[in-house]
Image 1 (cartoon, rainbow, N blue to C red):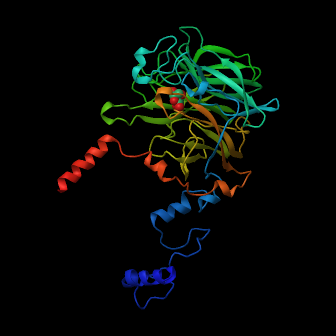
Image 2: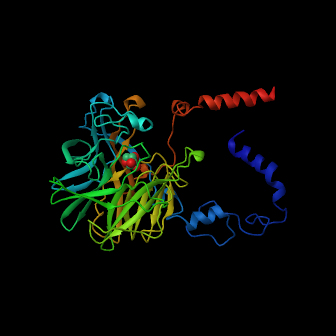
Image 3: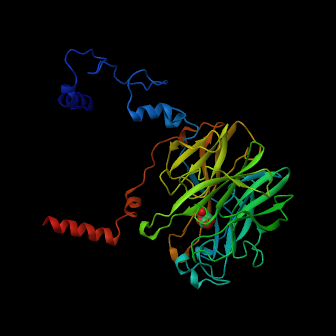
Length: 430
Ligand code: AAL
C-alpha cells in the first residue's frame, strides 16, 4: 500500500469521529477554516493555538530559514598554531572579536604556556607560581593576525600579567577589544587569586594602545568591579564584551552565581550590561541586570536597530539567538544547535554606532578539553562560519538538523550510577 492510501485510511479511522458529517470540507467541526496547507505569510484570521501564535508574533519570520537571525554553524581548523602535541602545557582560548585593521585581521585571546599542565580547579590548593589550576590560570593576553581568517600568525603577548598586587597578577584572561576615537582598548578578566580556590573570582581591568600592535598600557585599575555582597555579580565579572551604541560604550559581561551545593551541578550564569561614556569608566551597571538569563560567554553584534546575542550553554535559554531592539530587553529570535563556544565574531560595525547592524558571517571560537583527555587539559581556537547577516543569503547554513551518527550518541551514554538505577528498577519488576 502506498503511503498516500495508508494516510487516507489512518485519517479515516482515527479522525472521522471528530468531523461532523454535515460540515463543509474546508471547515472543521467548530465551523472555522482548517489551518491551510500553504503556511500563510500573515497571521491568519482564525483561532490559533499558542504555538502557532508564537510562530507569527515571536519571530522575525514564519520559517527559521527566512530569518536573518537563524543559522547553523560550520567549523574549520585554524592553521598556524602549535599546541605542543596537545600535552596540556599550551592553551589558546576565549578569543576576542576579530577586527580588520592595517589590511589584516586581528584577534586577542587567553594564552597559557606553562611548564606543566593544569592540576584542575578542584585541586587549586596544589597550584603555585608555575603550576596552573584551571586551563586559564597563569595566562597572558596574546594576539595573532591573519590575511584570510584561516591561517594565523601568533604575534606574541599583548598584555602580560602585571606584578603583584595589581589586578591580574595571577592571570589575565578572556579579553575583548574596543576601538574608540582612534584608540584601542582591551578589557580582560584580572585574577588576583588562583581559580578554583573559592570559585572563579575576578573583576575586569583594561589596557589601551594607539595601534592594535601595541604597545599596550595596562591601567592597573579595576574598571568593572564586582557587585556588592549579596548581589548576583558579587564574585565574578567574566567575558567583558564592548560594543558602541548611542554614542556610548555598551559592555556586556557574564557572572557566575547561586552555586548552592544542594543544587549542584546547576551554577547559574547570566549576563549583564554596563554603560560608559569613557572607555576607562566609570561604567554604570544597568538597573535591570541581568539582561540575558543564560549563556556561558558573551557574543553580541549590532543587528538592525538593536543588538543580537548568541546564547550557548547554560540556562533556560541556551542554544538560542536572541535580539534586543533597545539593547536591554532580549527576546528569543531563534533556537539552533552546535553553537560556537566563547565566540568572538568578526563584527565590522561593532564600533560604528550603527542603527542598521548588518550581522555576522564568521568568527573564532574555542574547543575546551580539545584532546578529549582531562589529564592533558587545553583548549584550541577554531573558526566558525554562519549566516546571521543581512548581507549574505546562504541556504546551506539554514538547515534544521545535524545528523549525529550512533557513535556520537553512544559517547553520551549512561554513567555507572544511572546503569545501577536502571538495574534496581528492573529488579523491582521481577
Ligand atoms: C570561560 C569564560 C571565563 C571564565 C573561564 C575563563 O569560558 O567564561 O574565562 O572565567 O571560562
